Length: 177
Length: 177
Image 1 (cartoon, rainbow over the protein chains, first blue to last red):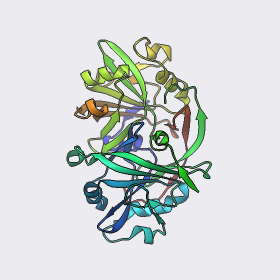
Image 2: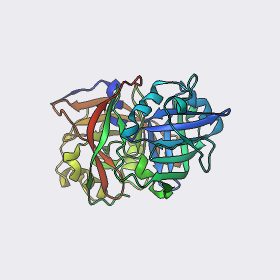
Image 3: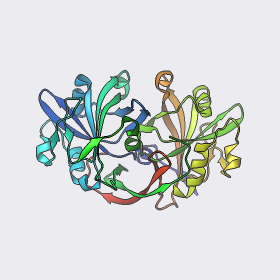
Image 4: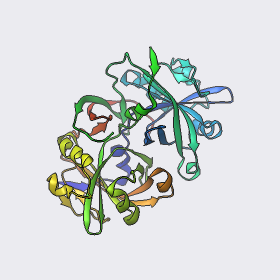
């Protein structure tokens, strides 16, 4: 039997892509924020659409520098991921506070988070919906992965402190890319 | 040790939100497509950004009728989900072929897929990026959930026929909505 779902709860159904930790760099300071509102928009070059609220300290950095790194944590980093989401770069050096390692990126100024098993260096290529929707289109210009991590379990945000961790993998006869 | 990840593989890292089955209705015919390129864009009213390739039969339906339903399947529907992704509505009545039940929606013309544990009725509110990026912004105007389904395991597309199924749930002291 189905019943009404409050509209305010819809995001808890749709949001769960992998939670990412976004690094930016502005005026000589690197920062980290936690984000899960993003989607692929094209395969190659890979385009990613993401929503970054203008309430975030990172918003001004992304808007003015047009560069960021999407760092993908596995569940082992859940504490750091939530810590970065709960605090603001206005007052905190999150790399120091959460003992994360900033590694230099190849194509952009913001650092990679070394502990994340994959890192995607990005440039903003379209910000025309940034004012109305806080929506940015990023092009991934360089991507890194730790191949020794055989079974990376990413985290999916379900809202209100609840997260789902990747479970089993299934293989299906797909014709989709 | 990190090494280069081919840019063509990036989508396999970022895409994994829940796979949805999108229903549209055009010229008296309902259709279904499988989609995983979508993101939340606002909480309330819930806005959802999604990419629907103009190669899809559903594209014209969405663009002209400006209505769709996002139906969220659990892993029990994996076969139907993949079947809808592997076939085209140009030649197939997918409801019939995959034995799915079309139930009437409350606010839009396209039907709900009854077997999906949640259904989100949507209207296109912004299509200004549809030509360049096949990107549509949807407003969810009515949402349905089957609350008897206690532990719905959604499916996440990892590309090349590989899918991850939701695993365990963790609770973290989050200040994020």
